[in-house]
Length: 365
Image: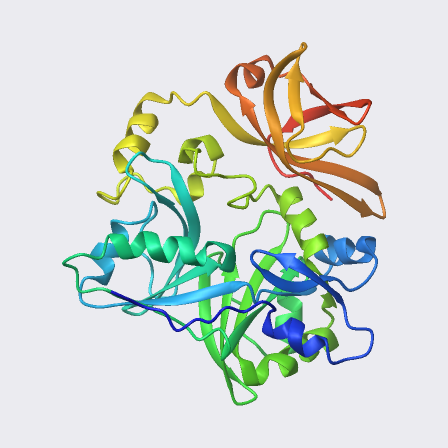
């Protein structure tokens, strides 16, 4: 059974607190909540993410404890990545599938000793909780949502993020997808190191009573506050897809190219038969790819062409202004035959055409 303690939060706790200060940042909807969109000019915020350290709101995360004697077996049967073999202070990003192998959402599973915790974006929370509830039948499993009004999470991203944590006397998890608990100024904090390709990514979970103190301390230690506009542009540069934008219910896991979410020897789970069949035969006909754009800024949904024929579409696009110039990057679904030819693709924005080069790794910024 599930016990839902979460309440509908239209605005994150950090956004609410920052609204009380002079020159409060503008907020906009992101991942199902209202959160700061922009603190400074975009170029400065992108610069902090790419080359220094940036603090940002992660109050759109919802955390759920998985309890009961059957919790490991049951959860392992619901997600695409390992659960039983997680280290005691480790985590794994997962896709959630239906019986036809189609993606229903994504989330991260974290382990603390014998305890399991889910981290779910607010815009997926209701859907995934309802999905899970349908499959808790004779199992001794209970999903208990954390009170979103009693705790929050702050992000710290950038190549110098580790130095910021060290200046505050906080531990620095050295490996991706690990975490540590620490007492800091009388607060019980959890510091997670999450996945990134161009920078270090940390998530700091704090009781609500320490949120303002933590935010100010990060700034004092050298982190630049950034909003969701810069953060979303940077995740496109890192090649990290978002469910509901780059991944959708119609997609199969291998089409997304996110093999870090798949474990091929963990045992049975919902949708596994389809995933294994694709793994053994390798017969998906399109893949999510990272692109670098030359030409006008493209919109999500813009078609990609090869020799005049449609071969895919852009799902996310971003413009990054840095000291070295402006870069335009994108994520898109591309048909396999276009990849084989290894030629630049074309797109149209307004009345102007541009070219899109498929990248084999995230661009150096």
